Amino acid sequence: MTTTSYRLGSVEFKNRVLVASGTFGYGDEVADLVDLSQIGGIITKSLSLKPRDGNPPRRIIETASGMLNSIGLANIGVHRFIEEKLPFLRTVGTAVIANIAASSVDEYCSVLALLEEQKGVDGYEINVSCPNVREGGLNFGTSCPAVAEITRRLRPLTSKPLIVKLTPNVTHIAEFARAVESEGGDAVSVINTLIGMAVDINSRRPFLSTVTGGLSGPAIKPVALAKVYEVVKAVKIPVIGIGGIRTAQDALEFLVTGAAMVQVGTQNFVQPDCAVKIAAGIAEWCNERGVKDVGDIVGSLKADASVSILDSWL
Image 1: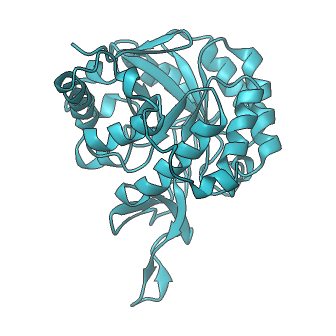
Image 2: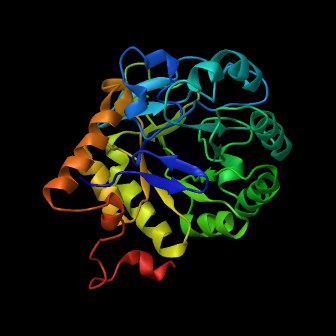
């Protein structure tokens, strides 16, 4: 049987398929629909120091092969998370990664410090790249010095895996990955959503109240693969691939390109148990081909003979 587990720092993931932040709530909402113990890990909905109402409606719209959202990082706040959600998450039998979003570097530090005092949080994913909040978010994610500072300030606060989620809405995402690596980050998540918009031609108004939002779903997979490829070539720390993954084949494309793990996002809204099925599909594909460890296919892409446009950027 193929070995599916993967270790990142102090955390042993039973498989390489995680559920992306913001697409799975805090886990308890889908517990009756999914065997959570079969997922490699749950990345929580973003947590800020205080509760956030997020953006006003309308804040979700379906697009061709994708979805635009402008939720605005609405969440219950870290204190309610500790009191109401974490006790359940301690029972799920899989890794729990807390996603943190903030409006200042100090807020990132405060939220992580509070979570560090609790049992049941195995690591952190730092959201510096949400494209639908007016403060923080994209402003942090498009500034290399800011990403470096956030990583540098957070690193001494924990020995647990520290993952930074990067925006694709920059010219050279590799530069940001290098900044994370240089300041001691354990991994990067690639990519967050792309900036997009949708227009109602009858009212001649944008569908989203914020005009633009974050595009996710199958439409962004080719972009995500290219960004993963760019980052893998630039850093030695693990890359977690995200973007348009619906099937085991999609996930395998990211693994072959060099992603150490993957996250499933928008597809969770359509098929809540898709991460379980994708993990099983990866194992089945490897078993059929005599692959002893899923890690053996990571970065096995045969692209050396061709010249990529990315080579002129790196």
